[in-house]
Image (cartoon, rainbow, N blue to C red; front, side):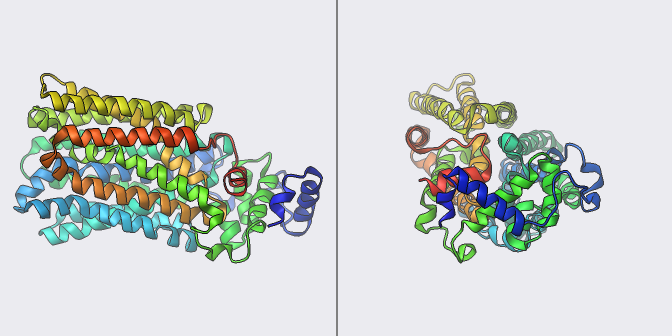
Length: 486
């Protein structure tokens, strides 16, 4: 534990760095010749961006798989003559798989590596898309929807971790934000493809689900060309030289110092750190932060709107075709404002985006509730308010959640921390998605959206009082400020 206090004393810190450099690090330096044979040949320039874009394809499949069911759920209900309960289970089975995948995601990620876990994710997406499209009975369909959910859950843990661990500090927000950008791109593409494919007839739902196999196969092939996370190689495998070769590409000017910082984070840990409970007092603050931001993400009502957007619009008096088309508008707004957010997140910071977004979410959700209360559904009032809601969500929570959770935990427990945040997110998503139809039918739109609005007031208080800023800091600096200094 003493090294935490040495970090505050400049002379002792310099002495410590010399000792670590002399005795603990393989003598390979940034200005020495790196063996690029271990690095994919076409990623020697702008490689971090290329790696991040490949891994972010998992986010595209995440978004596509999450939203594609919105266009197919009515046809599926009619095709297999499902009861209300069976219909709800059909929608939520993927979320159940997602919860399990997110709960278990840290184990393969820590044991087998980030890259190998991403292989499983790609295979799960590929099999799920083909299986649901070709299923000849409801039970087979449910098995493959569950498998797709496992892929979504594991992806939400592993992909943000990988990108955060290969990103320079000054670009980490934008690069991890690529994951969320691809999530909303996947949602937009699924909405658009659902609208176009719906014109083909009663069995078009099979094609809606099956087209996901194409990007899933591309993702599976491209994973081969990314390296393993250097932090995982150092902390879990002890492969310092291989990790330094990758760090040289990521940060050629300061890779030695970055390697020292990663080694420091291991030395600063107490004995048995790798098996220590995440819920020990040492990690109290990052645990609370991760649970809170994931909880508020879902009690905004975002997944209820994504899953049931056509039904919400029909509740507001729009026809079925107009309702389905309006979801394309929601996807487009989500896409545009996520793109805006990830381009400024490293400049203005995570906290300011959350403050602005919280205010906008409160206002837009309140307007939806007031409109349902008044009963005046003429025109496109509800779709417009929904699009404003989506804009503020994409600009804040949507862009921040995976970046923030991937940053706030120490290297040794980052996978466990990401699992905690991701599983909290998906447990709440399952609860909201499963209960929303009942609450909307029994309590009406006024009460339901008023509840979401009140939750966003609580989120505003949380961000204002307790959420720290992490922009521009290395992962090891964030560890010192969030874990050590809390």
